[in-house]
Image (cartoon, rainbow, N blue to C red):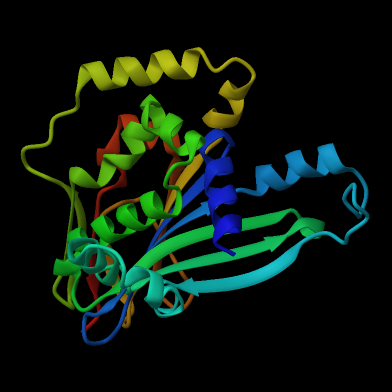
Length: 262
């Protein structure tokens, strides 16, 4: 299963992908953060290469819905982990709250990959994001495609995004804002534009990429500052979708304040 996740994450690096930043809050302020990658374009590409309802080996199309918990992997690999240096063991132990979710249905062109972690309060989110990044690197260790991703201006822009985003939640008001000292780097934007301009046929595919915010609350939403945001019928979920490249260039468009009902 680990190899499947690694393959999909590697494919997402070079394939059109829609991102979803998802936070679900519980009544006590705890919750879960999940970063999801919709890689349906991968399915379409594989479909063209394979053709028909079966692959070249005659096997049925893949269909799975799986959840992998790092804590279970740590138990499974306990003997080998015990042979590692104490510091490395501690680093792995710190990842036990990380979860990876995978849904794939070749027949219907569905491929979703998500990675995240639970938190006791939103104050823990910086450490949660760090754990997610560590888990991704661990899962893609010694992978040449993952190394190439680090050199990409698009990748650097998306990976560094959370360094200047400030989240807060007190049970009444939720905020996604830019840090006060944040300044857009002209050099980074120039590098991003240059890379996109050199993408050739892939340019349109990357231009169609989206970034979606999905925030679920235990109470109904009373008001929200971003006019582009949509509230669900039950009033408890806020969704905001934007073009991925435009979001990277103008992150202020994805800021919002949400006030909940008493």
